[in-house]
Length: 113
Length: 116
Image 1 (spheres, each protein chain N blue to C red):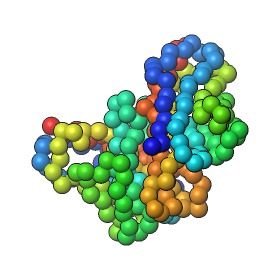
Image 2: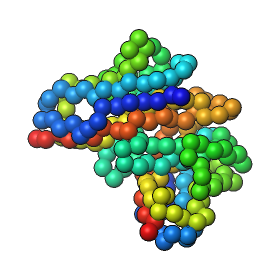
Image 3: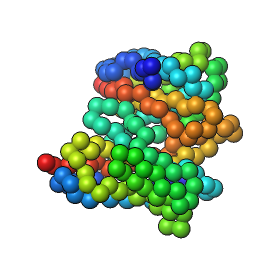
């Protein structure tokens, strides 16, 4: 049981490049979330999903797209990276049965030059 | 809107000292409250939670009590260890939209450094 995994762990992009971050969970959780963590700001929600095939915008969705084609995977895409997207990205999942507990992946550190 | 305010760090303590990290919140309704811990180079882990007023969450010697009258959820530990060095985040859950999911609203985090 690996929990929540994220790939890659680190990435450096040039402005304008694109990439996809992968989040996978093996706990059969319905809900999945993408956050970004910036110094002194805690974590902020980018997008989330309440089930396979559904996505919704969070607090800071601009410049990102997501897809949830399979229940266990939640992809975060950057179509044209900007330096303002330099951050640490965390994925989380949650059992829909109201446990109130989100389980986090180890994070992806992204630098955009 | 809902928000969480934490004391700024870093907090530096000697081993076996008493720890308090303050957390206050603003919320409509009755959110659940959480403390998450982030060890260096890792993701966040749930440390403890409380789902209603006067509940006390506890884990690994840490405690926090949901105080509705003072809108607070302060984290305490009677005797810290070097291994407790980490960043601690206070959070509350907030409806994310019209569905039944919740987003976590995080404080800015408090770094704790425990010296031997």
